Image 1 (cartoon, protein in one colour):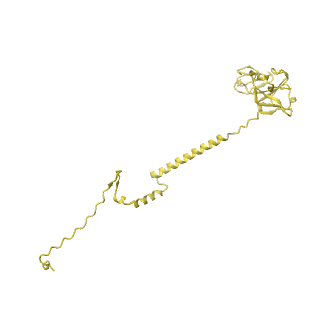
Image 2 (spheres, helix red, strand yellow):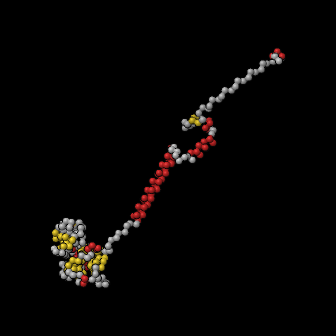
Image 3 (cartoon, protein in one colour):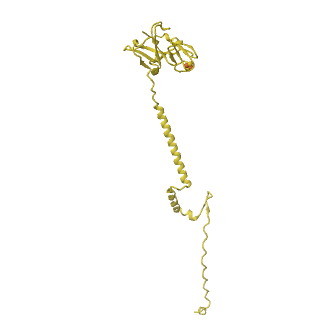
Length: 229
Ligand code: FES
């Protein structure tokens, strides 16, 4: 049928609409902090969740900044723990110091009749003492025993007893002491010291290094510095 069949005066049919053009992507929307958020990302909170879940399960060989931060935290905690353990150990060491195996301060030196006159060196090595028996002591004016410390009063070396010269001689700087213990040569500033000497309950000579007597202080007059026998 041709247009001629249309009734006269009827309006012409509208032209068909052209196909809609594709919409351009939404422009980024700046927020208050100046960041831009696209509609796709803003509306996709759910879409962000998989990313977080993925970050929590990173591979061991992932060298991203997040893993490095964790590594540094672990290192810091390890260092702190090691330092704390060391401090604790040092405190424990301070609370339980080493035991010093020093020889006892007192010892029994046998019976008086086991000694002759003069210097006896049997206790020098073990106890650092010379036991001397004399017929007339310079301070006690009696026969008996005194105990001399084997420590030079200059700088603490151990003198030797020279029986041929009847004296004690220090090998370090040459100080000399008479049998009484009084110094007479070298740099020693004062006589040797004496230890307490007495008779124990069983009749043996008892030497007590815990008590000292100094000649220059008049202490050799003390009865405890000499055992009459
Ligand atoms: S330590 Fe004995 S003379 Fe110096």
